[in-house]
Image (cartoon, rainbow, N blue to C red; front, side, top):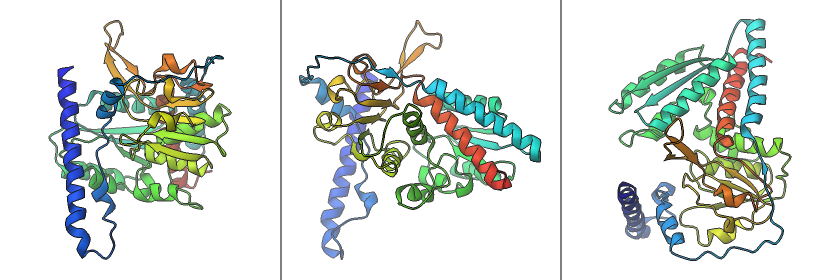
Length: 363
């Protein structure tokens, strides 16, 4: 607990320093610039939810009184993903029997973060089940950028590899942006290439790949018969991996989208207006029932491990949403685990299959 508090204080301190630097830059450079607006990167802040959670715990939350409480329907991501993965396996078999080729996925893992190791293991197992060839390069945390770029270069040039991903987050000593920019657009099955993200944002453009988790969230809504067109959606969290692309994708489906982040004022009030809530912060039980309007559909992306001696793994996962409270307010909700996670893996397999089909001109 003490370690967590100290870490939260350290993050808050770094956030404050970055804010001061950005504001100082504006003050010092504003007079010699043609425009008042600064470079956008100078406005970037580390999103720190620890201060928000501490503030919320210190105040009494007014919880709306719902006389007719609901029991939310379960959006079963595991079942939906298994159906999708079965179809992917059939397509892989058809490709192999027709042209003698199979899709190939390469993963670069840096360091020994337990969650990253679990994610990569699950992806490789899923590849095996679907008949997709996979390769993993496992590098120590002390590795250099050149070692990662060398592995990337090898995969980029390998015609039997159709998807390449670098498991993130990377150690802080590495330039994540520089490394990810070396991914070729046509093999960026994670969908993080700037051109993929830009095409996702622009009307009339089609990205080669949509980021896996946002794509999985939308598929869960569509498979569950949830109407998106014209609905109010709130995305909690604005990360490049989930929050931002999810908000863009929801807009492409004609939802009216609001993003809530760590500095948003009155987040509960904004969230309560939403028909669809997507929580993607990684802060356990952040979203209480006071954040939800009756009948809202809730997609919980967050996964946070906590120690649990009764579990075989020694831990269990919590989501961003307080599930026990939300099921009495929402009309439908994804569980953690078993909701978004399996869909993310399924979308990665699908992106890899689509990349291979494009490469071999196979339809």
